[in-house]
Length: 273
Image (tube, rainbow, N blue to C red; front, side, top):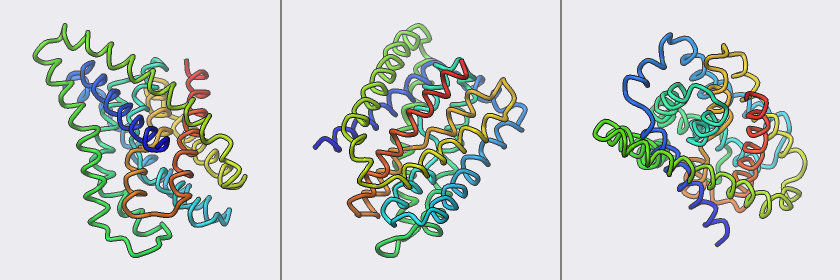
């Protein structure tokens, strides 16, 4: 029951954040954020290729148990966590760039996540790439694209109302993030020993690589690139694990990755401000 509550909180956090971002931004701001295209292309490559490949190499080098490796890789293969946009806001970064990046990652990861899963993940049974693609695409559309589009539509119709609701959903997202981090720490911090030191080390290294590679971006895009690359899409990872990877420790590895991800990202946020 507690794990179900945490998964519901992950979903509520993502929807709240995407609504808040949509209520803040216009389509013109999103289009302007991808000019020049260099920073966006660089960050897409980091999210879709570099971070997954690095995670795969690290899990192989560390000879992790299959279940721990699967949980870590599902997170690394699932870019575009909406909380990255919220952390970008708190880091005083380029929110429009972060949201545009999330939108592009939502489209691209519907293809890249199933491809990485089918090629690089140890599975208890054959995984049909199309089934993974459908589950990933459905999750991204419902939890990210639709809330973002709804928020932007309301902003177009009534900017004053959109501003009021943006504050509500932004505050809700911040509170949910704090509660989620505390809940993950309280419930799963002690259980980290069940996985062992090696998986935790690999998780920390994966998050560090995500942060470090994006840190080379020019200052105008750095905070958005760092936060959006570091925060993976836990909702997608949880869904794929539930449907296709029924090993008992996979979900624990995903939730622990989320805990490490948020703790390290919050430390990086303090350095970016």
